[in-house]
Length: 239
Image (cartoon, rainbow, N blue to C red; front, top):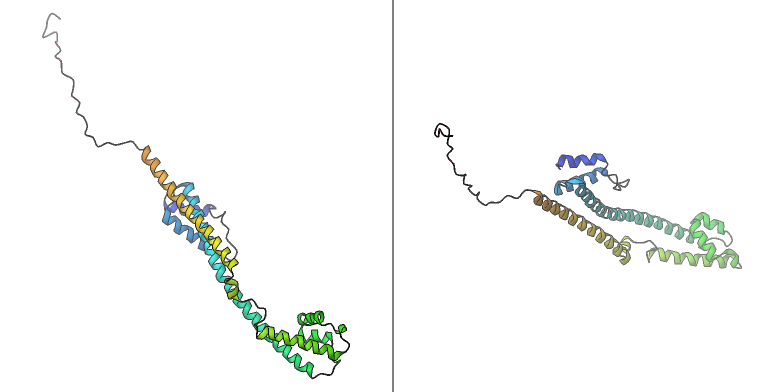
């Protein structure tokens, strides 16, 4: 089958079984498929299907690499945004502590905590140190300030609870999962290549056996039969 006919298969739904994600460019997959067609020059539906399997496996392997890079960029953005957000929250807590330690007992309530610190931190304080648990505002505020001091230490000196990118990609389970997936795809690629080679070899053998055999032996000379004289009536009047 000619290269032109192979490429015409692209227009006949040959990609219908291939999953192209929304963010992926179908033209890139088509380019990959065309390059494999040019390399292997498949003939017939069996070889075309095998080349498509090879292209799909290579596309999925390429997708893993692109996904890895995308995840790294995303985590970098998330980490940066969370770090900036965490820095702003630390500044808010520090300001609140300065105001609280100079405030008159009773002037700060649980509702005020939510207004100044946000619902998340105020909710944690309300759960850990509820105002109703203490006899007076002074005792309650001392506990609140102590808890906030601990929170600042965790989120500055110890780095907080932000998950770092290098921790994610150095995790043994993550690495093992990624390597296992790549190994499975490599095995499928190897099987597709082996099937292509076997199919082409088999066709070659069948074609060779189906051709008439031609020998190099010299042709034998066939002697012509002896010529016998035939008598006519002129030569023999008795006939």
